[in-house]
Image (tube, rainbow, N blue to C red; front, side, top):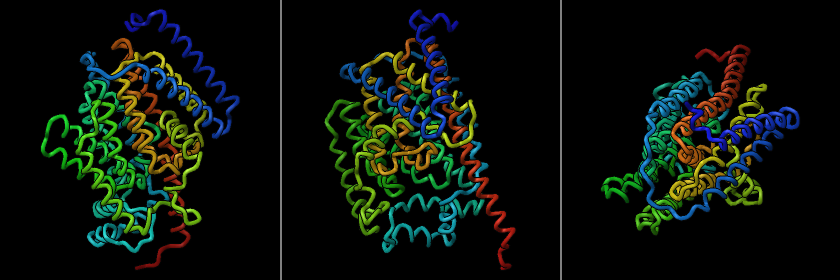
Length: 464
């Protein structure tokens, strides 16, 4: 029955897609044999995709009221994405502690209230970051789980689920249809680039801040569209909490201005002043607590103000590319990951050239690109992410924007069957990529566990 939807043009596109898959596999297997070379190929493919999307959609005119979304009777589709994501993310519960996790565990020792007070009020730290809320969640975890790794990972998963739910609410507030919003959230739930942020206990800073930012944006939009008296104060509170989770939260006012100007075609609402004021106060206190701007320092210069041409390469090329095709090329994989990368790149290109440009979708895609870039700016000095995906946790919030782009491309396909096929395919491909990336964390955590056991066996702890 699906063949009825395949016009001669679509059949031609399918043949081209198969040829592109084979061509990419040959390049990756024969000419790009090192992890860095394969990253470069993936980056070129992603740049072509992103450029195609921008050229096609940004020429489609101003947004106007769109026709209601046509239901396709495929509620099963969204559940497919949820189930696949849950199964894949569930594999991280077996991971042990890695790297910075041990320092956080040391800091989390009781008494609980003393530790919470310390991270919120201590100012003589000469530190790099002020993130007391996230540290407090670790302290609570320690009180609940002690040194049981699965408990900490479960908290990360619950926060990720809250981010997915917040994105659904935000998209609905922005006028996105229920089915498209559900598909977008299912894509966001399983993006491979999120493995470090969600799968690593110490990646929680990015997950918590992004979750609060998403919900703050949703509350702001609701306060403007429904005149809800609770929504605006809630948005301000969530904004403040996102800032003290991680400094990425400071960018929310820029996202809200983009929502007003691009999505609703209005001047920025006066309510933005409240966010700017709250952000200013918290920035001043943060500067006082850290004794300056904070951030990593090199030769006495904060990384926050160290801007070079590489900064723009990271923000505009490398980061978006890793959001789209962020596979860990240093993890032993074999031919199947090469095949997966080729299929993913081809699917993305097929979506970019086959979807129908539409004024309203163009507005949301423009907003999504702004979200991707703006939320990456606070960590711009880490955006040149290599083939091993170190520091890819900073792309958790930008992955919201990429999920929006992919969701709108699927929504623009010609028929319901083709939309369902594209969505189901992406669910499978993204979850396979996520499973591959999580395998690196499972291997690393097992190595850390085995090493600690060996050390303890060779040099036992003294009897207490």
